[in-house]
Image (cartoon, rainbow, N blue to C red; front, side, top):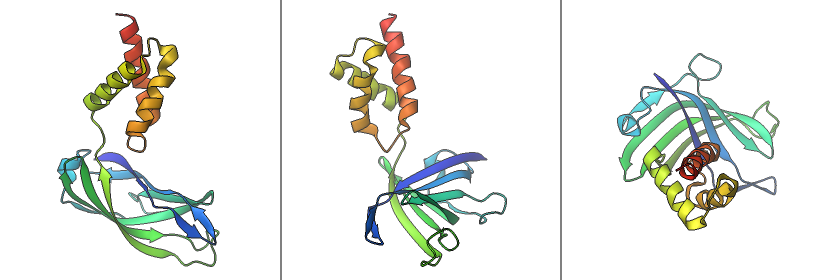
Length: 174
């Protein structure tokens, strides 16, 4: 079994007259595989918090943390660089600060981009280095600015930054 995480950006919505921009974050997901092609078509059921094996789900609204209990993940087929994911669960609002709202069951269907492979990331980094004309690690910010436009929201930028530094350090030693 593998542990995984899923982050789903949500469309902005209005709550009590204020605009809310947030995402659904699911961590510590026990998965039979890290390969999305192997997960395609699978329906995985999970116990709710605090039972062992639960998904650590959360959403932040106006700077406040709200738990999300996820009972089921349904992985659709991979189509190109996207896959469909259906998340079934409960947004826990009662006793968490939004006392005027009840806990809310939901079924969210989202189309998510496949994570980039290491080779794809390396190619994007090489392209950004050339485009930015960066010659040393000191100019890695120029490279990161270009990459942020291309991969933001799809990849962990700190991991990409470490890879940029590694590749630029290697390039300057050649």
